[in-house]
Amino acid sequence: MKLKNLMLMTTATALAAPAAMAQDMADSMTLVSWGGAYQTSQVRAYSDPYTAMNPDVEIVWDESSPEAVARLRAMEEAGNITWDLVDVVGADAIRLCDEGLAMEVDHDEILAPAPDGTSASDDFGDLIVSDCFIPQIVYSTTAAYRTGVEAWEGRTPESICAIFDTENFPGTRTLERRPINNMEWALLCDGVAMEDLYDVLETEEGIDRAFAMLDTIKEDTIWWSAAAEPPQLLADGEAVIGTSYNGRWFSAIEEQDQPIAMLWDAQVFDLDGWIIPEGLPEERLNRVLDFVSFATDTQRLADQAAYISYGPARASSAPLVGNHADLGIPMGPHMPTDPANSERTILFNYEWWADYRDDLDARFQAWLAR
Image: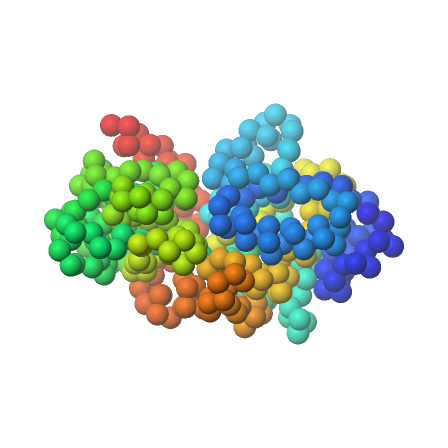
């Protein structure tokens, strides 16, 4: 795209990415995300408006973010980076940055400022957890349960530890097939104070305690890999309690009217955002910089919250969050950051998991196989 055609871009975007606009840009991009309701929200808030302004650009979506680290390592080894922009969680961004697989960026140079002129770095604040990470949303992994379970005899889960309480809340559980969050909840429900979770988990004794707690429900659990699975399992009655991303539960409860209720206790706050793979050819990089400046401006991040219950990462976006685009219901009460939902939360330790993820992944998979 030549400079004369860039008059279609917003003023904020034009100010944010001058380097990209002075050069030719690729006419296609492969964007990598997580599929489901979250990716749909990105398409509606980011890529559809962008392609409406740039009709000659083709955007291809790939749903491989759960395997982003391994896939990018393989691409680097093969010398063939086929992805242009990748949505990852904060801890994975730190790992990819440390390994030189993600590009370091100057957030104030490549991203739009807030409408009042506040720099991007100040607008995102502490959510910039890596020099390679471009934040999008605050989300949580949290529990939900099927309503009206006869075996519970009128009891209602009020604590995350209901997952481990098979006496009062019998039935099949569904938890993610990875150590993240499961280890924290296991220790919390084994009596470890929330502020001590990562100190305890850093010891062999702490790891053993977490696995011992998980042993108590291992045979009662369906282990999921795709976040769409738990809401479906609860909706079908194949599981009675489980964990997934809060946006997945919102979609099942509010959009699909399934007999499911949220259990916000000990939700784990996390971040999601973009990384740019290191080593992109110039024309592809220019297109990515143009897109990411547009897709992460104040209005676009607020727009995404109209489609899914994830909080926008920019401070300037929060006042612009309104009603759901299709249902018309206020989105604020469905956000993980709403005061009524965040009375007791676990703050995900990005750097800790970046350091220990590979080892604990291997131990967790070996434990599952036993």
